[in-house]
Figure 1 (cartoon, helix red, strand yellow):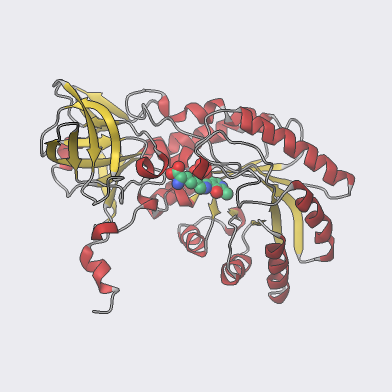
Figure 2 (cartoon, protein in one colour; figure 1 turned 120 degrees about the horizontal axis):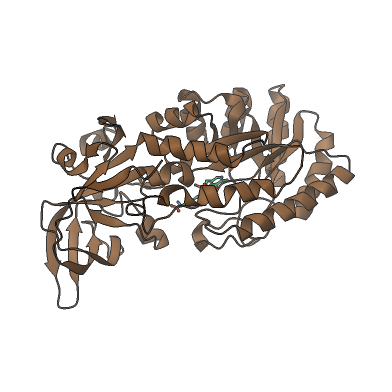
Amino acid sequence: MSNPFQFKNNRLFCEDVDIENFAKTVPTPFYLYSKSEIISNCQSVWDAAAGVDFQPCYALKANYNPTLLKIIRENGFGADIVSGGELFFAEKAGFPADSIVFAGVGKTDSEISMAIKAGIHSINIESAQEMYKVAELAGQLSRKQRIAIRVNPDIEAKTHEYISTGLHTNKFGVSTEEAYNLYLETKKFPQLIADSIHVHIGSQITEESPYLATADFLKSFINKLENQGISIKGLDLGGGIGINYSNALTDKNAPRTYINEILPHYIKAFGSLKVRMFVELGRAIIGSAGLLISKVLIRKETPLKKFMIVDAAMNNLIRPSLYQAKHEIVPVKNTQQKKIKADIVGPVCESGDFLAKNLEIEDLSAGEFIAVGGAGAYGQSQSTNYNLRPTIAEYLVDGSDIKCIFKGRSIQQIAENFEW
Ligand code: LLP
């Protein structure tokens, strides 16, 4: 499948929906998702693991809209969660408990108990203290619980430092030495099924070398464990496969580049190892499927800069401000006007509030719309109500059909939870 976002007669479409025509009928800004793109991404992940005993999981943190979760579940994915809230959403969206994996450095007792009671596939252990706690709670509940120790391989993922997780300077997982000792210790806890390993080195990874290094690392570690009589049956390879941000909208084949080019090599690097493999992908499944649509409010110039002030801001999409992410941004109607260099900024009262800096874009006027590409992952899920801005709506396109899948959260609804 090619990119579902295409210009036809200079007008941007999502599948068969003309975005400008739709945007004129609803309040802006809003998120817009393509169903076919989500399905194609899921399918590419399955293709990457052809012939392998495989369970892909979807990382809810990327986007937890229930309608999107159901599409992903229907495509055979399990769920990767990091909180009790995500467990609640995963179960409510119908993910079978035995396809849910739970990582996170600071799980509370109640979250651990919830997970054990639900019968999830695996709790991924990030410290010795946590392993003892899981053993204690599983014992109290008279349940057996599978664990996977999250090993920190000390491998540089070659990504933004805030989303690199596999280095010893990061808070995630435990060192090989500690993991080894913990596996030996698990023999003392019959309520723990310690037959799995977890690794996750970071996010928005666009090179295969860190993954191949991780595979080499894991293979030799598994070998070491086997020599001690600890047999590993489940291998959770983590997530992190990147997407193409800079031409998310204009490259017809952009969306699945890294799933297709990196994931099969990562999986194959384990050779003939007889294990069930898991991945936990968020961005690669939903990132390319979402746009943020926003309206130009004001065109403003200082002696040094041109600004396009739009109605979406860092509270809706924080990635440019937080990770210097460069999302492709285009007008939804290409009128072939002359291009200018402008900062695309929102109404929030921070100079760090921008969607793009020095972007070459047509000189749009108030009332025209822009589309921000690659906004499906870590967009709405990282949004806030900063400056008392409402949470915006989400729509799903399926062919020529478009429906609201989240109404947003109005200021009135936010106000209701306060004591006045
Ligand atoms: N598994 C674990 C244990 C994780 O920590 C993460 C992401 C994933 C899977 C999914 O990673 P993905 O396949 O989506 O790269 N807000 C940042 C990304 C933070 C990622 C956090 N952990 C961003 O917008 O780039």
